[in-house]
Length: 561
Image 1: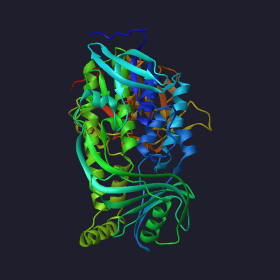
Image 2: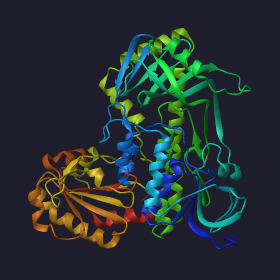
Image 3: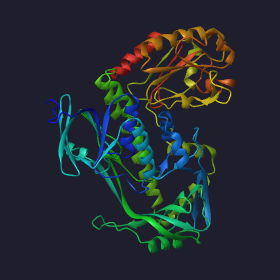
Image 4: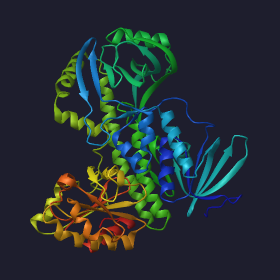
């Protein structure tokens, strides 16, 4: 079958669903120069706060897309969490996160969507609201997508690719008849966005463990807070009933340290936890992403972040394929890389949910004591921050990451830097081309979702000897891959910039003190190729142009070098 549109409407990519996942994907594609359309059956944006947390890794992605500043202005950083049993504080866990964004940002999903819609509009793409996908037929060269507008008029759009970002009740997934296997937790939960008066922290999450269930209070814009509380197990056959303000107040009276009064509710809701995941994200020219592909407990605020990472991972790959710069097989790595991440999130959030909802008194006591002791340990705090912020996500087993190392001992020292498939390391740098007020910068502020970045470190040991080699490689890469790769040449001393400051299209950055060289194991000259999603795709020492070209050819083909 061939893609056909009765009214002649054709588009490279049709995105179904204008939540944070679909909007992020549309922005990544637009930045890469790929035309797309994004439709949503809702006539307007969501007015509810829904997902609240944007973790550090997601903020880094927004930074690479040039979007982070409006989010920082609109949100509130939360510096840690305190856990109580009645009036006794069991633990205080500061967020220790190795990122320029050291804390999670609390911001209502409605605001997140508004900012993403504004950013997409600036890129010339409007969300087509009140336009619902009602069916589709896959074809060899695309998908025939049938849509209905709010006035009942019908249209068919021929899309080379269709992405289902339409949430937990995804029509795309259901029409594909893809199993959404998983489990359901027995507990019912209440959710309320209310004003709270009383002695309550404004810059941290406050949780209460009680024999009746857990209670958590998240600062929105104090005195407004999000209240989430476990109501206990409920038979699956019974409907979930939204709480009243009186029930919310009674829950705080029983489970908190007291003195807290609720008022002015803007959202009262209830939910039950479902843990489900599709077996495959790709179905020919149709993909599933975000909640359409995986749902889990909201504990830890991982869902929206995981979905936005899905979008970034798929976006750069789809752009290369659509532009003819990579083969179709590259898109198979979306499933291979992101599927295991979602499976890990399901396991982690499920385990945390079951720990929070323990009913056995002995088990609760062991849990409380363990949290009290472990939360004081620095390694536990750092690990907790890395997991929650998703900085620990890695694609080491991916077929499109690799490395080249020589046989000398010095060549193996690069192993102390980030491995292929791991998140790249950020750090302070100086831009010698900028004015004095703009000179200080960070590596991640130079990365973009549009292109790979080749980081060329001249090394801390005899760097003057390596500058010429780095320049030759930089010039070769710029000539062959200007549309695909930006080159950043990093030196430990500004004096090394002068002899060649005007050559090539590479950007020079100075690493005073060599801190970033140390993080990358760059005692001698070495190179790291960072993908548009911020992960190391390839590293090499010594520099070897043929090895880099071999990797690029393999990556574009979606296979291991």
